[in-house]
Every structure is written in structure tokens, then in C-alpha cells.
Image (tube, rainbow over all chains, first blue to last red; front, side, top):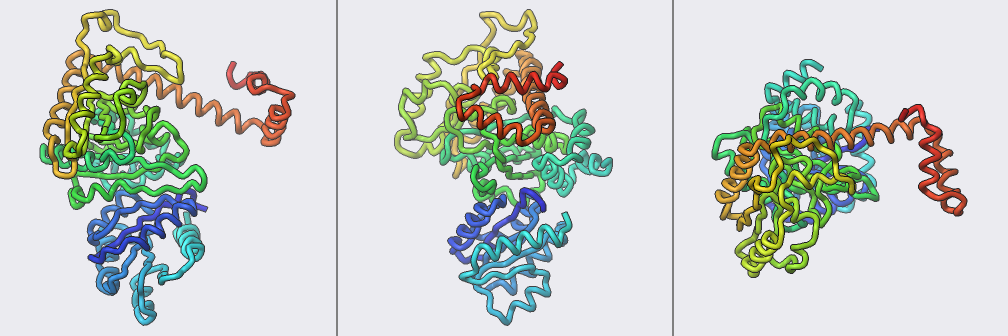
Length: 135
Length: 341
């Protein structure tokens, strides 16, 4: 088990609702994670830069605006350009079921809709960090 | 390992980020790399930023970093936030106020959790500073956790310590208490557009007039014990010039007063260097660090060589008043005479 798991919680795009992101950040803190919280209106470049400097294990995105099909591939691309290919993305927000296969194909490792219990999210993060990164 | 060392010395951001993780995790490989990096450290000027929660430390760090970047120097930032004592988790939220710095490759921001340390920094912050120093950052800004009256580790780490106040936080009696205000090299009254700013400034000035702890070199107390540092014979005498901390008003969110603050920091740096105090202060910092590391190493070794149930038994004896805590310590030390003799 990796100790001291670090996760970035970021809100890309222009919607101004960060309550969900804050609730998740707090729940992850309570689960013992170190949560780097960057706040609203993060560009893909800002997210990749923070993920790099903070050397996080996972990037968690909160997207409520419906722009996930535009934002996620862009963020993945900028992260990959910054040699962050091995840093997984998870996604929370309002994501229609029909978009999920495409997002998973882009390498999104967890998609959590409204009402997902924090235990499920925590379990998923632990699984991603411990099994799949091998550290 | 050697690849990592040269990557750090070349300023590779990915390498710096990864080494900072190893350093924070106290991973074994970090020790080897730090050993090789150490000769390349000691060049950066380390500025500590401390003060109560909500005084605007992060915004001030953001503005200062922008001002230094305008001068063309490279800026490293370490922002420390508290770890929950119950869950071990932490919210590291200082980057929220530093978004102006994004996209600038001359800035590197790293958040650190205290991980159980109580003095306002993490135990590994000093080593994290060394990583940024070796990577070529000229100015390193270290933001402490929101500090109360005794989180004074920063003064044992930074070259210039800023203590940030905001209007309306306390009266004149707060200002003459010992602790955080005493460690200031520069006092900053941030949010100076708020009502009560002038009153805060005059309370701080009054504190300085009542009596500033004369030469800073006398104050290196460590856990209640004044350390015996060797003073150069010609150094401390009564008419040696004394640094009086200036009180600077700022509005960090719009950059007001930041130029004055940068000047005040430069004046402090010039003063320290002109008086030859930098060498002396560094020696004191090293001495304190050595003591801390030694204590840490000794207790680790002691814990490793003592069976777990032994402690449980001693704790029960202390609780049932069969044994007092100090006698228990003496007994443990006697049984580990090999460690300390």
C-alpha cells in the first residue's frame, strides 16, 4: 500500500459550482489522502502544471457543465505532453451514461455521478494507486 | 541515482517534483540523493511567511513571487498546510491564491502537509528547500501553516522571516506577548485597506519600541534551552547595530505595498550580510538541525530495539501509579546504555 496518497482535485471549465468538489476534497481528506485543491476555472494547462509540480498520484476532475467530452481529452493531452502519461484521471459530475465508454477509452479510470458514496470513490482511488501503478 | 542528481541540478521540473515526494515520504533513496546535492545548496535566499490563518499569507506569496519574477529571478514556493491529526489526510489549498503564477516556468510551487509536525512546517521542509536550492531557484518562499503564537520553526529555517498580520485580530497586549511577533524580521500588515489598519500598525510599532529582543543572535532558544553557539569574539558587543523590523502595509490582492516589502526584505538581507551575521546565523541553524536530527534518529533506534509490549507494560505501570514517567524514561535509557555510551 502506498502511504500518503496525493490527489489533485480541480474544476476545469467555466461553471462556478464547486460545492461538490469541496465535499469530495473533504471526504478524501477524511479518508487520509493529501488533497491538493486548486479551485475554480482551471485551464488544462493549469491542471497539468499543478499535477506535475505536486507529483500527485491521481487527478480528480469535477465537471458539471456538460463540457466533459471537450475538456477531458484536452486535459489528458496536455498532461501527456508534460510526461504525465502515468497519472490517471478520475471524473466526477453529471456524466451521461452514453459518454462513459468514450471517456474510458480516453483513459479515464473512474467516473462518479451524483450520489456516489465516498467509500466507493476512496476504494477506487486506492485500487488505482496500489494495483495499477505498482508502487 | 546519478541521473536524478544531474536532472535536479539541471532544474528538471519532473525530477524536482518526484524528489520532493521522496523527501516528504522520507524514502531511503532521498537520503542518498540529498547527500550528493548538499554541496550544491546554500545559494538561495529563503523567505519565511508566517501569520495567523486568514491574514493573506498565500496572496502575499503570490504577489511577492510576481515581483521577484519581474526582476528575472527564479522563485520556488513551498506552502505548508496542516495534516489532520485524526485521519492523516490534508487539504492543501494554497495554490488557489497563486493562480497568477501558472504558466510561468520560472516558478515552482509545491504544497506540503505537516504530517504530524507541530512547529508550523513539516519535518522534511528543510530538505525540500534544499532540493529547490540545488535546482537553481534564487528565492524560496516558504509559507507556514496558519500559525498561532508558538509555531516558530520558520525562524530556524528562513533567512528572512515575514510575520503577516491583518487589522482587527488583536489588541496591544497580544502584540507584546512572546512568540510569533518576536520572530519577525519584517512585519507586514496586510489587508491595509480594511478599517483598523492604522491601529494595528501603531500597536506593532509600540511593541517594537517597548523592546525588541536586541540582537537576534541571542535568541536561539531550543526547547527551552539556550544553545551554546560559539560567537566570534568581535561579533557581539553593545554598540553592534541592531536590526529593527520595519512595519510594511500591503494589500496583497492588488499588489499595493509589495515593492516596499521587496525593498524591506532586500534591506534585511543587506544588513545580515554586511554585518557578517549570515555565517553566524547559518551555523546556529545547522546546530539546531543537527540536534533535531540526532534526537529523531536516537528515538527511532530506541523504538526499533524495544519490544512493543514493553511500552504497553510501562504505560500501564505509569497509569496505575506504580511508576512515574521520569523513572520510566531513566529505566529505558539504562537498558539501552549501548545506544548512548
